[in-house]
Amino acid sequence: MAAGLASVALAIGGCTLLVSTSGLREDDPAASSPDANDGASNADVATPADGPTSTRTVRLAAGRFHTCAAIDGDAWCWGRNTSGELGDGSNADARAPVRVAGLPGPVTAITAGYGNTCAVVAGDVYCWGSADGGALGTGSNGNSSKPVKINGLPAGATTVGSAERFACALVGTRTYCWGANDKGQLGDGTFTPHKAPSAVIDESGIVDDFAQLVIEGDHGCGTRTGGEAFCWGHNDDQVALGNAAAGTSSPRAVKVSGLPAPVDRIRLGGWHGCATVGGALWCWGRGTSGELGNGNDDNSATAVRVDGHADGVTFFEVAGGPDDGDATCAVRSGALSCWGNGRFGRLGNNQTGSRSSPVPMTTLPAAVVDLAGGDNHWCAYLANDEIRCWGQGDSGQLGDGAGVDRFTPVKVSGL
Image (cartoon, rainbow, N blue to C red):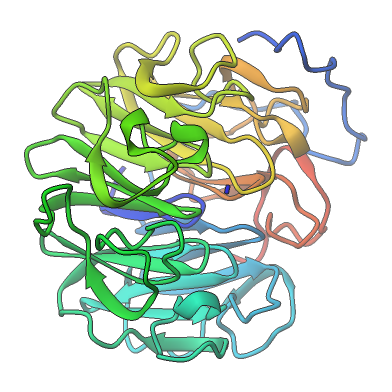
């Protein structure tokens, strides 16, 4: 394959991290406007800086066809529930948020993957939904519609990520992964699946020393405590890991090429990754939908700088899945811009065409505090305490009760 601020954890397409505070491509047809009932109205929309400042603790996570939010420690999910990924004890889809059942305490980090979800509670990791490949860490392939604790993981987890048939957690400065490993996505130097956590190692066989963790699809990345970025797993098109020498996959963490250090923040999509260094945004990997943001649709095995984002980037996320090109969104000077694959209205600009340079989003009523992207949809938590989502909505993943695609952001109901 090919997932402000007051203590916010960020997640995209199956990856989570606890933190503190434009032209249409020539090969794409001109995008048509959606039906009048699809998407929010542009009328009476405030500037991103308007409105109150949030005082709540909200963490967002977006999976392939579902979305979750931890609000002041309580976990809620909505969207597809075929494998029990909403965690409410059922397999019924939900077009509006339902509460996750059975978590033993407040959630401090949450992530949504490909039919599964994980959360950190008091330093322990709990997962629910699809157990395909051993992703639930229970020793079996049986799905669970309620949270189950991951056994064999040291206490003190701060970050968790769930992706396609595997999951990982950051405990101290060590990254542990479990589940499928056919592409080396567990990063332990083998291609052998593990239903219990195993440690990620580097090219020298040394257990890696990470300060950040992010996983998506069938690969992962992290930043060492010194600020260098390393990735492992499937190297789609020999570019997704940012290291052409890795070949088609690498079961050990390899350094991202062309990326300055120290890296402030790193994120992964299904086919590409991005990182900020001193406020500048850099991306690498597949660029066929313009997701690298450098004005063309070329792939790149080394990091390239995003147009107009050489400084001032305070926040960004990456999203994408196995079937389409990825998309990227970033906040700069208080404004949100998106680029890449625009299918289903993923760029939030009331169009469906792909863009290879950042396109400002003008339809959000307040500043973005947290942001998460799934395969084909995005959700944002705003400073006015609203959660708004846009893009593909046929499984209810936008949470507005309608179950239809939205080309501009709509408010999640029931929260």
